[in-house]
Length: 240
Image 1 (cartoon, helix red, strand yellow):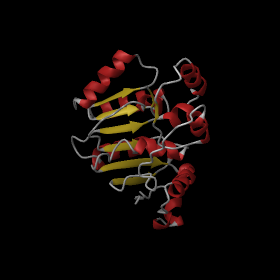
Image 2 (image 1 turned 180 degrees about the horizontal axis):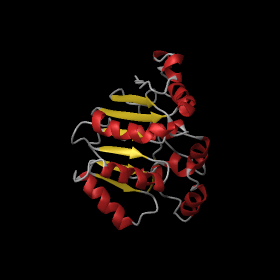
Image 3 (image 1 turned 45 degrees about the vertical axis):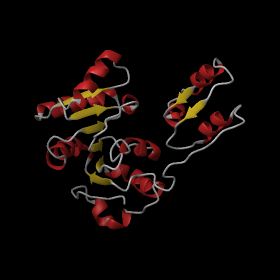
Image 4 (image 1 turned 120 degrees about the vertical axis):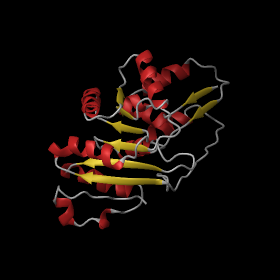
C-alpha cells in the first residue's frame, strides 16, 4: 500500500519527478491512496496513469472553507505590518489560544519570532531546512502549550497536525488561492470553530479579490472603495 498525502502541494513544489521515480519502484499489485485538497491537471494525470480500477471520494465539494471558520483581514501600510501583527497577537488572539503564523521565508519567520518574543509572547519557529530533531522538539513544545505562537513557512507547515489549533495568521498573504485554503484549513476542524487573520497591504488587495471569487462567496461589497484606499482603516471581511 502506498499513500500520497498533500499530493497537489507536492506537485506545486516540484516533486513530480521524485514521485514518479518512487512509484516506478513499487510492485504493480499495490493499493494506492491519494489525498489532495484540490485536483489539478498534474494530480489527475498522475492518478490515472496506469490505474484501471479506481474510486474517487469527494468530501465537502461545494465548501472549500469550513462554515465554522471566521476570516478577518487587516489592510495596512507596508511599514505597519509588524505593528499589525503584534496588535493581532495582543488584542485579537485570546490568552492561551494556539496560533500559527505564516511567513514567506525562513528569514521572515526568524525575524518575526524574535519580534514576538521581545514583545513578551512565548513563541517559536520552524522552517523546511531545519534538522528533524530540532523541528520535532519545537513542535512538541507547541503541542504541549509551552509556547502559544509558532511561526512557520509553507514548506515547514506540511505535516503539522495540531488537533486544537484556534488561529491562523497570514503575515505574508499567499499569491495562490489554493495555498490560502491549505493554511486556513489547519483550524476549524472536526466541528471546532477557528479564526484566520490576514495582514495585507494595498498592493495585495487584488489577491483578496481573487480569494473572494475562488471560494465562491463575494464579500468585497462590504467594504467601500474609499475604505480600501485608506490604509488606516482596519477592514474585517468574513467568509461566510
